[in-house]
Amino acid sequence: ATATATAAAAAAASRARGRGSGARRFAHSSDGGGAEESREVESEKARAARDARTEAERLMLAAKQAELEVERAKLEAERKKLELELLRVKMGKESKSSAPPRAEPTAPSVQPAVVEPSTSETTKSENSSASDVLPPDDPSWDKLREELSKPGVQFIPKPMRMFGGLGQLGLPPMLSEEDITAVRENVLGSGSFYPTAVEKSPLRDRVIFRGNLRASSAKAFKQISDKLSERGLDERVRLFLMQDPEKDNAPVVIALPAAAVPSARPLRALFCVVAAALSLFTTSAYSVGVFGLNTEFMQRLAQGDTDELAVAVPIFTGVIGVLLAHEVAHRVVARLRDVKLGAPLFIPSLQIGSYGSITPLRSFPRSRSDLFDIAAAGPAAGFACSLAALFAGLSMTSLVASEVAASFPAIPTGILKSSILLGTAVQNLLPGDVLSQASISVHPLVVVGYTGLLITAINMIPFGRLDGGRIMQAVFGRATAGAIGGITLLLQGFGSVFGDNSLLLIWGLISIFLQRDAEVPCLDEVTDVSEVQSAGGTILFVLMLLTLFPLPANLV
Image (cartoon, rainbow, N blue to C red; front, side, top):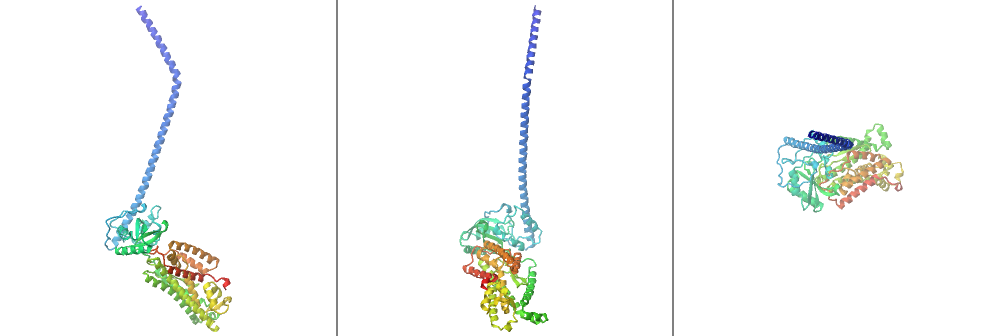
């Protein structure tokens, strides 16, 4: 019984295990599809997570790369600064090795706060000298100019740019930090010009002090000049009181090394000698050429009678005399105003003998009034001599007999009508209706007077460094003079082309190539000229217009 019961229990247990195994197999088979779908979802989520991590890592790498590019740009900028500083150190060493030792200027113990452009910041050197400069032929200048010409390196405010030509001519030295500080603290101040900021050019050859005037411009500049001299800085530093067109013409003070002055270009002396010789030749040819309509003169000359050339001597002498009077007047007044002038460069002309001379300034006028006096002296002397010769010649022409007048030069009346001044004088001083004739015989002094008027008038055209341009700059200031010069050149071009005036056309081209630049600045460019000087300039410009403008037909 026991064995039978045991066997039955074992059989029942076996059947129960079979039913449990079947149930598990059924349950497993019924849940298989859902589990596989769940695994696919989890797999997609894992892939999305991996993709997100990959994209995040890529973005992080891009950010790191951008940071590296910024660092590389900073390092490149630092490298450029170091190269400039190395060049500056080389400039100082080579200058000191070639120049005798000199005492350094004493430096104040307190350094002022200086506002400098980031591109022109340089390391201060306690051994910086006011005369550190490379020799003109040193190749380092080319490399330095190349570096400074790159975008973002050169920063020169507009008031400084007019001094750039001095570097090309004289390669000016740098200003020392000690002198810059001394000017700011001991020369400028609340009684004259109060500085609020300082800016330096990349080479430290020009420094601009920004601030405001605390007195009239004339009084402030006098105080500044006196203090500069009292401190002994005038031997190393030159100061200019100017206007900044980029800051609504606000007054600024520009500091320049005293050694930087306008200087002559190479071979200019040789050009002056050659041009003077050519001007003598063309003036002599012009003096003979005015007798071209005198048939008696031309017949004798064709027969080989060179003695007839003697009649041209008075005209040659007179024209040269007017040119010399013009030039001497410039130099006499320049000496009185303590301004140096360069050698005159006479421009030869087959039309009127000579166009006059180009006389450069070799130092800076103290004020616009001094510039006016120097510029106006030449035209005033030229007009005075020419008018005297013209009226004297017309008076003698009206008094001589017709037999004597036959030996005078014959002038086409078209030339007389080409000038209001000349045509009016001829009509009023010569008898009869002379302007209705084809030509008229006049005394040689008339030719001298008219030629002198033409030479003086074309130099009074308000453009560039002509006498008229200098007077315009002195009276109205640099910006206004530049605008008037551009308009004048445009009108002169139209008048010479459409008015068939070859003289003005040739002179305009010469002026563009040789006289187009603005004049060197005055030490005080802010203070205006006097009313008397303005009136004198007006008279000179009126004489210029009366000489160059043709006589209206209704006045003939």
